[in-house]
Amino acid sequence: MLLDADDSQLVLVDYQARLMPTLHDHEAVLRNALRLGRIARLLDVPVWGTEENPAGLGENVPELRALCGRTLAKMHFSACADGLVEMLRPPARQQQGGNARSLPKHLQKPAAPAEQRGAVVLAGCETHVCLMQTALDLLDEEFEVWVVTDACGSRTERNRDAAFDRLAGAGAELVTTEMVAFEWLRTAEHPLFKDVLALVK
Image (tube, rainbow, N blue to C red; front, top):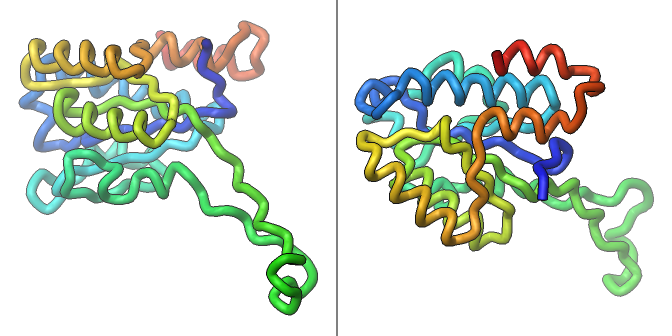
């Protein structure tokens, strides 16, 4: 099973400026997160952000925040508890034309389903807390969850790696930034191949 750009959404979890310096290998983690966001924007993959307790921990790093279509402020460790699922699943579109309200209920057409993107590419901090709890809740909500390991950070490698083990056991796919980029592209003939390659390099 490969990632499809047309079925993907990217969620960048809690890359907050005050938190980042405390994380193991934080510069590489942030660099990969920014790469992911830029590649997603190039390929028209929706990008969302979350911030844990922004009043206490501050906002996401400005360059990363600028890549997100919307950033969800949250207090729960799982972003799903504060509205992420509703962001990822748009409401049904209302039917156009006619005065459907004047018809009896059994004659009204149901609202057209909105375009669903069922694959959530997830990266963030801290891996063993907010990222993991969000990923497990998204799996419960029947999304496909792809965790980008080289764009995830915790204060210790042990905590980060324990989260990866648990996520893999729960059914999340573990991938890297380059795996995501090249699966979204699929071919060197993609019109944006050179642009994406420049970001990967």
